[in-house]
Amino acid sequence: MRTSWKKVTEVSHFAVCIFLIILVSACGGGSDTSYETSSDTGSIAFSVEWRGAPTESSGRYAVALDCAAAGVSIVEGKVYDSYYNNYLGGGGPWDCEAHAGTIYGVSAGTGSRTVVILGKDSSGTVLYRGELINVTVEPGITNYVGDIVAELFSPTLLSPSDSSTLTSIDIDFEWNPTQGATEYRLQISTDSSFTSLVIDEASAISPFPVTLSGGTYYWRVRPIDSYGNEGMWSEVWSFAVSSQVWRTSYDFPETYIEERWNEGYGITSVAYGDALWAVVMSQGTDYYLQAWATRIEFPETYINDRWIEGYYITSLAYGNGLWAVVMSKGTGYTDQWWKTDSIFPEDFINDRWNEGYYITSLAYGDGLWAVVMSEGTGYTYQWWNTESIFPEDFINGKWDEGFAITSVAYGDGLWAVVMSEGTGYTYQWWNTESIFPEDFINGKWDEGYDITSVAYGDGLWAVVMSE
Image (cartoon, rainbow, N blue to C red; front, side, top):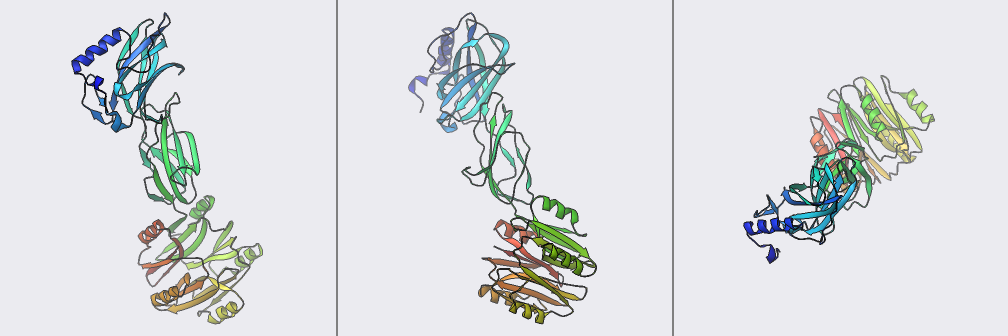
């Protein structure tokens, strides 16, 4: 609320200010009560023009700040040497309603002083900042420098946009420049209160590159001027880095795989259909080393060699005349079998089930069904089903019994679906489309689901996503 002594007419207020300047006093009052000049020092008197701020009716000042609406409680002034950025002195704090002030005892200098005005809230955070450079301070007098323009001292965030989901872990953080700022403090946290910081960079410049793992993040930026004065934090934006990425390509995506490996992703699904290879790569799989191969014939020798080295088959597919196999370390498996057969190998599956093995990969190609069964999966029970159409009823029935889809393949006119108990999944979705279902995947990613199976058959892409 404005005090009654401030409610004067434009003419009378101006007259009062002139009179006070003649007496070398603060226009509008403040905490400075003594006149301190000498043959080596002078004073600087100023008024403030606020821009981009809530305003009230103008009087003597070009724009009068509505202090309460803007959140500004006090105003401070600081003087620096323009050449060396040395702090020379300051004034205030003044009541925000004054819109003016005087800084006393400033070392004299010709065109070599910079005046910085800071509008602060009750906690001392700088909300508005103004600067006037090349100020001359004549000794023994009060030097009136006119209006100093003060603007909101906080950046506007640009990218990554709020509530977005990113599919790359290499991210450029960008924001609009803030008048008067020479650098910025960037904070990125896994919580909105910024108690779990992953980045706290005090000298960031936009764009600022950061590499992050999958997860949800919050970020904010605050400006810093060349004298170390920090502005207020920007608003807080959130974004998610997908723990999973996918790529479709006409050729097997060797370069893409290598790049994602270097970013900490591992191959979790491979499929081929509609003249496209589809590769899904995920973080947090526990795979710490992977190898892959493509062969015209089923890669028996390659598999045996990798088994000796401690790898296990984790993905299998056939397309464009090639078998593709992915083998990984860190699976938790303790043993593994594979079988190829011109008919679905029901007897082989039953025999291995009786020995404690479970189906972990399934594919069809070159006239052969290929089934991989592993020991140490954590599964407790398993079912499989083959049908000429996608087996929706079978899936729904097994979902009701607590089973989850763990493998899908198509071959020889049949869809084959494997469902397992003990997967750790809490919920699943599946979708079939004639084109690769990018929109379905993105929508389920936003809901916290991951791709766990991909297959193509009978003109349809089938994707399973699990939580």
